[in-house]
Length: 515
Image 1 (cartoon, rainbow, N blue to C red):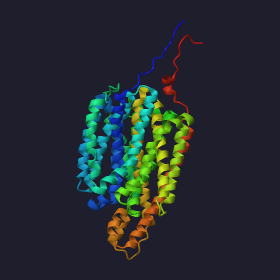
Image 2: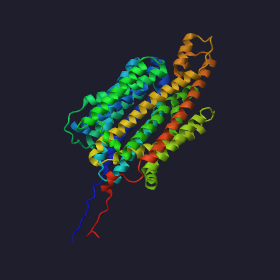
Image 3: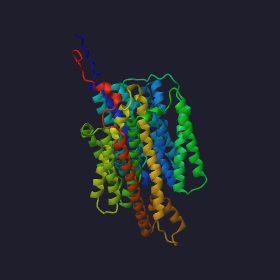
Image 4: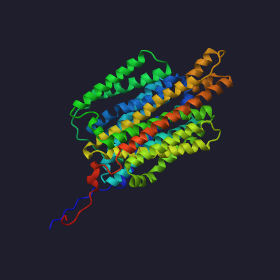
């Protein structure tokens, strides 16, 4: 009589969960840093006077640089150690935060935000990889990834509230200085609690692929921004063509490398490709709208920074609350139906924001923000877990980097594309009379933030605020439509059963002879 017993993976203890708290604090801060600047737009506009195009670059250059370097930094982390790179990045992030806080003009702030993106790119890949290394038990790992995902989503939603508290008492640079003590804590806690781990790669870092990936992204976004902000000229098709060539060269190179920067074969898995698409579209709509919604609360509704941040609190609380229900939803519906349904719920929230922006009360907006937070929170948590568990364990590092890149690229593209559409709609709805002073007209057409400081005539600003609100409604409905598409895609493409790649973790223990 033979006996076969499958050994269970070791379970994580208190040290691992404490280390997870340190990792989540990194993700939380990076997510907060992506949105904390939203409420500072009026005050920094009055101080350093950026143009509308510079304002968009200040908002999203951080996300573009971070997304463009994530996979490269993941490769570097495999070589030099994930803990080591995370600690280096924490120090660099704190230094870049000081430079951003003290920026005297828009150009310096854009450069400092780019440096923050570089530093952030060294932090993000290590966090999820270390989570996988610390949590071998699949159930514990799913819970840990859910906490990690909730930190990213809640951080993005909490950014405006954190910014509101700081801006109520300090100048706009304080939204960057808050990073310094947090990163100091991460340096100490990370050095004590985090285990060192490395990948098996012996290949050199592929800087050429990294350069091609950036070449495929940044020119395309520039073309969209320039078209919406300045108008169509030769630079629009020129930069779009440059992006297309960069993208083609990047994909061609990845298909020929023994160890590609992006393993494009992963996208042949429906569970993986569907989850990545759902992640990108959901954060695209969420952050793209949130950037201008914070301005709407302050400039149109007249909220102070703290009140505006508190007004967005329902989104934060709802995104955090999903940890309590996400396990039940996945158990009952499966991953695909859970993600699809959550995105459809988020679409209802976005449509509700568009519908209630004209109302004088807050309750309609508050309910819409709660619905949006619940939908996006569930979708982000389950899609991240679906991406990581859709592939075999030996390919989890590549999957993690792609998941993080999808998150950052979705947010940055949301600000760029939806922001450009918002700006174009705002200008199209403006109705400035022929007697309007040319300097005032130029300021009003540039952005609502500049209109608030330049338009002494209350009627002119009232008209500009109405144009901004109308544009926000159109953008909200467009973002909702995108989430409907993403929801249907996720429902149909992502399997609702446990991915095959993870089956070996769920085999029952068999004792005695096989029947």
